[in-house]
Structure formats: structure tokens, C-alpha cells
Image (tube, rainbow, N blue to C red; front, side, top):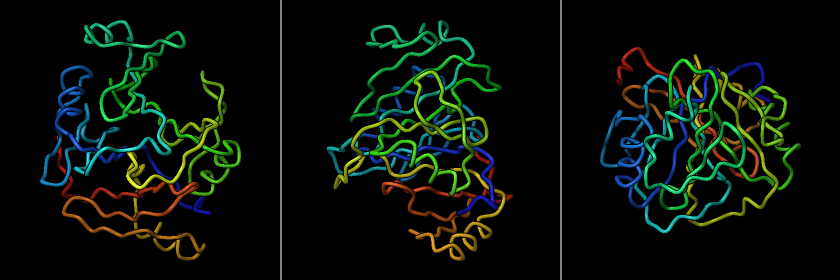
Length: 236
């Protein structure tokens, strides 16, 4: 249980993709994002570097869905956001929501709700063999219990964004689309200590120029990153 140390926000969703430029081109042209950073290994995109982002890691394709159902962004006006979707096939299963298939299995959603920043992360939807049990396990990782949303499924909350659990088979693909979920924290060291004290499996610890992070294995082998932004963090 990591409930003693609570994450601040859902910082980013990291994906393994074979053609990151194609996805980056879509989100920068269609959903109000820009390229925050680009290296030989990944492209980081978002509407605001300090809000929810997508990290696109270069990887061999084709990728498999695995645990990831979709990623949804929050907008203040869905009608306005859909104005940028000319020529894109859009599915609207409920009022105030729209979904589209981007590339390599990535399904992207738009959800109308009050937001300080358009195209911030609204929720990530995961497949789970046992959604209610999985939600409880995420509470043990510092996420907060939340009432079901419009989809009517179990979910947890972090900093106003959600992780939803839909009944389905996440599988154990050799080449998954989802790399990890990342939540922002004040102190990565506190999470490292808490994980070790509680016997939670640590996948990796990464001390990068602008961030310091610990990765742990969450339910159904979804990797969760607890990332601390260093004072040098100045991405725009």
C-alpha cells in the first residue's frame, strides 16, 4: 500500500509505437497539442508541459492493445474540438464524448468537462479481468476511490483525472501499446522507500536531467511511474 504518499496529478501516458511521428502529427494538428520534447528515443506531446501529456516511445511494431482501451482528453467545448476533426471518423457513444482511432491501435477520446487547460488528460481506460478488485488495488498505490463516470465502470482518481477499468482481457502481449502510466509526486524518494517497505515490486529507478522517478508494477502488469519534477524542469 502506497496510500501514505499521494500523487498530485496524472502526468502522462507513455506508449510504445512504431511510427511516433504519425501520431504526433495527428495530435498537433487535430487536438491542440504541441511537441514538448523530442529525443532519439521518444516524443513528448501535450497542450501544456506541466499538465497531462503523451509520451511516444520508438519501438518495433506492430503493437498490441494489451491492457489499454483508450486515452481521453478533456475539453471545455466538444463542438469546438470536433471542428478540427474534418475527415476523421468519430464515434460518439454518449453525449459530451467522442472517440477516434488514430494509429497503431491508439484510440483517442475527447470529453467535455470544465477544465483549466483544454486537451489535458481526462481519463485512461484499461481492460481488466476484475475491474472492482483492480480499482481497489490502485487505491493501494495512492490513487483515490471515485464513483463510476459516464461509462458506468469502476474507476480511481488522481488530481482530477481518472483511470477506468473495463471488464475485458488485458492479456500479456509481447509488444504492448501501453508502456506505463505516470503520476506526478513531490518526492520520488518517499515512494521508493514506501514501495520497499511494503514489498511492492520496483521495476526501475531513473534519475534523468529534469525528472527523478520510480517505476513499480501495478495490477495486471501495468507499470506505474511516480515522477518528481526537478527544479530544472522547464519544458514548455
